[in-house]
Image 1 (cartoon, helix red, strand yellow):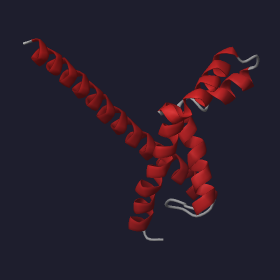
Image 2 (tube, rainbow, N blue to C red; image 1 turned 180 degrees about the horizontal axis):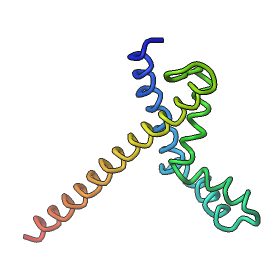
Image 3 (cartoon, rainbow, N blue to C red; image 1 turned 60 degrees about the vertical axis):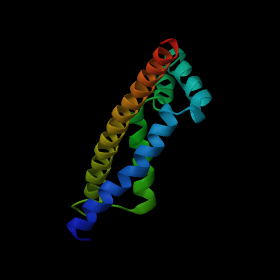
Length: 128
């Protein structure tokens, strides 16, 4: 596979990885299972239990497992063939996906702040 094609795959595969990792670890649709996992990650009896449940609360940690799923699904390898290509691809996808999630988090914060500012201005206009 040509290097440009490999790089395109890298940036494209990171999109669903970021989307799934963010949705599971942040969005309301998974709130109840996430709260269950948070509880068990703090109150689990064994280290293994605590770490297992923590994986579902941290987007960075969870993105590794989503990446492994997508590598198995697609067979994508980066720069080299075999296990080394999978290893390079895996960490590269995780890094790009987490960059996407960081950018999304920043954009989302700006949107929340802007909505709060608009509400404040609307309240001021009503009182004036």
